Image 1 (cartoon, chains in turn purple, green):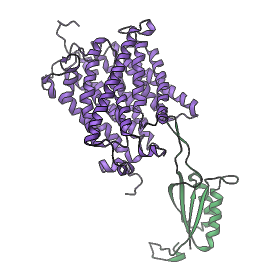
Image 2 (cartoon, chains in turn purple, blue; image 1 turned 135 degrees about the vertical axis):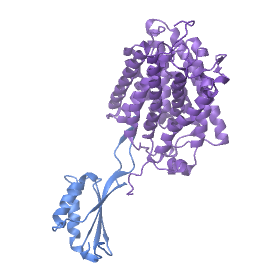
Image 3 (cartoon, rainbow over the protein chains, first blue to last red; image 1 turned 45 degrees about the vertical axis):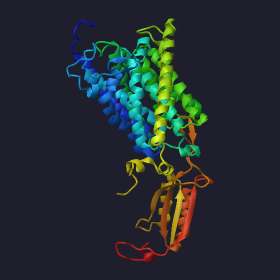
Image 4 (spheres, rainbow over the protein chains, first blue to last red; image 1 turned 30 degrees about the vertical axis):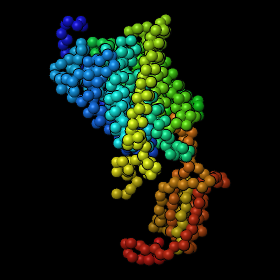
Length: 419
Length: 119
């Protein structure tokens, strides 16, 4: 659709964007279950709350200023801002987003769900020991100072990385690399859990929750990836959405299968957590590539993601940092791999390495480097300020007793008591 | 009167109940209380895996059963528990323990009866 034609509302695209927005939000409770099942019983609620609270905190932040910072009028390609977008006040319900035939408020909400889940991913690295109020302050600052600018750089039509041609279909760089590297920095700053230092085995309280969460994540990811066709195509619910949907399925399935086989070979057991981890690793890796590669490449990317992430999650024991639930090992490493492989396997809108062009791989590497540097450094600064002012880590007694009782005054399970 | 407390493998409960019934059931069933407990002796927990890491919990799940009997039944009860709880053929580490404790008093709540009658 050319610019001089007034766009009209496309009901198919609008319906799909409304549905995908709700699906992406469902990934947050999915993440809460995924993470919540892996911690010890005394921390199940606080771990789930770290995801749930992002829906409340970032849900407000995004409405007030987040959207304006990420998708407002560009200032030098570095950050967006329009005072009319504060609290979404200047967006009439009938106003359409760009030439997409979708109400802008629907686009705002779709993007808002990404802003919510991204900081929640970080919580996996600091589970069972970070102060809850510090975490809440951290995600509010992180979303404002790191996520919004980065989303602007990569996704806004005037963003500087977008203009350079960095491809990030649904958030490999903006979501997974930024969250993953921030998770690693935070885990290093906050130090290992007391019982990890003491060498005690830390066993999950309920892998049934984790599997349920992985299932919800997979379901929601179809909205995450196929809904992201909004950036490349009009009408939105079209070929690119279909391609992204197919790739999402293929990559997750191949990755789940690869992780299972790898684990069977490594120690002789097919674990449920392994299958769930593989699925998530595959979904992470295909995210930047979803609308740019063919389904056979999605199978390859998913399998490679499981291989590389499996090695990465073993690294934490070797190097002695405590990324409790492998937020870096899966999201950071899988995100970096996916972003780079996008430059290898892409066929639309540009050719990748397999079709003889190395230019895109270079651009992808630039995107990865910038995201790692910006998110890593930014997280360090935010966390440093919070450490000096309110402190990052709970006291030893709280950690020993569990944060559910200390922070929330509740227990996750009363199953054993008679009354 | 003695209180007999046994720590056994959970999967042996059925066999223990069967052998106890042979010696204790005199037409009105027999008295048994069980609970699930965790602990360790020489045996530690079963190996589990967490994303490629091998973990061994320090404590292993066991079943504790409590049977209170009059003195004449003590040896029979012990023998029955050993018979049901020992894994074939000669037993293995982790089969459990039996503790015998002297008991002061027993009271049947319904009638207020005391002592050996109430047990």
